[in-house]
Length: 286
Image 1: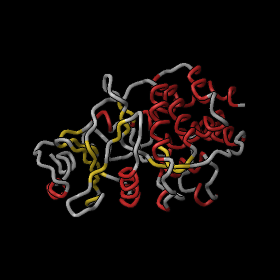
Image 2: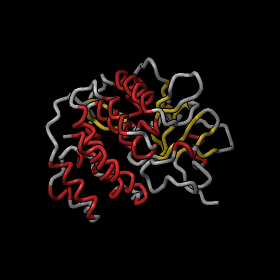
Image 3: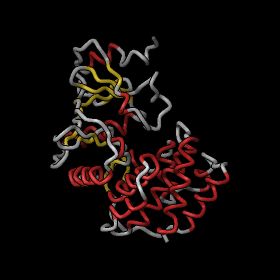
Image 4: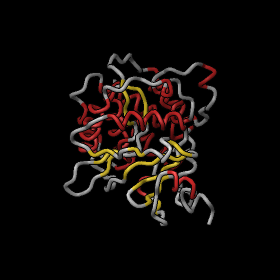
């Protein structure tokens, strides 16, 4: 068994005060993480006793997020609260820790959106950090493509060679209009980051942080529900009460298209339902 497959190294476990000798990979939470590390053989998220240890891609971003989440109070959702190491650090040798919260993801787009709204209300007061500006990791690159913020040089970092994908991205970009909604910290992966457990409040975990309008996170949920869960296009109506909703759905489609072909783990199998979703939703976007 490799070190990665055995879970966090001993000094990381000791640093976070883990007494449990057994490490359980949380497979339900490593789906679609967008990381080459997140496979069944090399999971990045492990349960040890009442803690969850997770490898992080950016220590600065993870530390800022943990310090912010430590301060917030939410109603309507449970949070996986971050835990410091014994010497006060949020990240130790590329690992972060949080309290374990029970639950599993579920294809419940309306409930996911409601949980996301509760989370976003709780974190709305956090100030924008520098670590979320101008991200150029693949996930950040896909976000900035969706929002039309890439320079020509930055765009060339991840050429989109697939003809059908490039055409649809071009069509979506051509119809893009300005968004005037305020930005804040959002969780861009609510479909896999909201857990349900019986009658308990939904839990929010594994935050993928961006500084965007909170409604965009709901738009991503709708796109994911159609693409990955086979939801009917009528699910688009879940966000009609929001301002500029359909423009945000457009940007959610752009985000998923870019990430599917340019992310850390390109997902060719995900392209077919995604392209179908673009074709089905396109006429409704104007």
